[in-house]
Image (cartoon, rainbow, N blue to C red; front, side, top):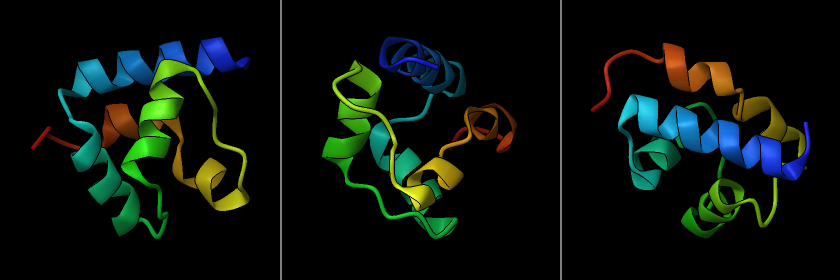
Length: 71
């Protein structure tokens, strides 16, 4: 998946869940993945994408759709 594609899918998933980047950061942290808000913003805008092994493991787009009610 290219950078643009990843950003588009991530943005769509975030909108579908109704979650802010801060809440996504909390959920990732609960899964043992430490990602800054700036990094999440870069991923969402397409300026970068996950590359570290722990980031890649933590950012499974399907998780955004299946992680229960947005809160």
